Amino acid sequence: MLSIEEKIAERNVMGQRADILIVDDGSTDRTWEIINQLHQAHSRVRGLRFSRNFGHQSALIAGMAEAIKTADMIVTIDADLQDDPDKISEMVDKYADGADIVYGVRNNRDTDSWFKRTTAQGYYKILKLLGVELVPNHADFRLMSKRAVETFLSYPERNMFIRGIIPKLGYKTDAVYYKRTPRMAGESKYPLKKMLAFAWDGITSLTIAPVRLILILGTAATLLAIAMMAYAVIMKMLGLTVHGWSSLMVSLWFIGGVQMISLGVIGEYIGKLMNEVKERPRYTIQAKLN
Image 1 (cartoon, one colour):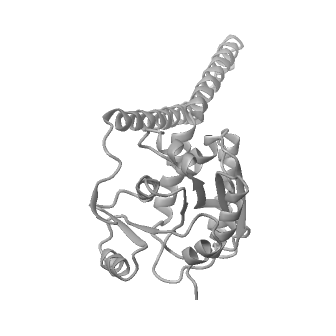
Image 2 (spheres, one colour; image 1 turned 180 degrees about the vertical axis):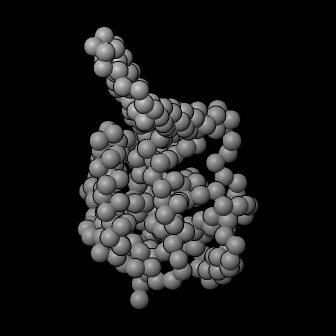
């Protein structure tokens, strides 16, 4: 049975050589040992090993930066085998027709739980309301031409949300649709906590809408305070003042909560700015198999 790269090479769409580059994001199991074995058995298998875990987005960027040195196009795909590698040939056809970016898009979410399916759809809707251009039901399974990858890699920011940056490149795009399958082995490295952090990173790296929302809340709170002041003056003039602390306490807690949330959101943006200014490397490569 022919492998995916052999099928593509046989059709002579992109030449006679297609390599597989595997990025080991600082795993603590036998992953790098297995990559070494594959490299010894198959010259087309190459590998990168991080010195520690730098995150999914950094692993993708490192793989792109290394692969594009010798490739005319690249395909990124997660190693959990849930995305359909047979669709790569169809992606190559779209590339041959002139598309610089071909998205792999799920045509259903049957393998997801109700909670994950509902929150994912809600997340896409929120980002759309915030003005973020995103491809729904697309993760990181995509084909990109050499010039698209080089343009993407010219973006210098460290806080990178790749799914939101790729649509901003402006090149011709297309899509292939596939059914995502359950994981063949292992457990997801994205529990709810990591998923929420990833979603928040996506929002804060692509839009300043949360800061604008703070301005709107502050304006609304100010207008409410002015209205309450006018109401208190009128009640005082009419002699209808009622002594009590409930409304006062509720107001204090509400204003205090808004202020703390506002400071937290602003602090998040300031923290990201601090990381950008430091210009630290996105990742450190410990070993490389070419």
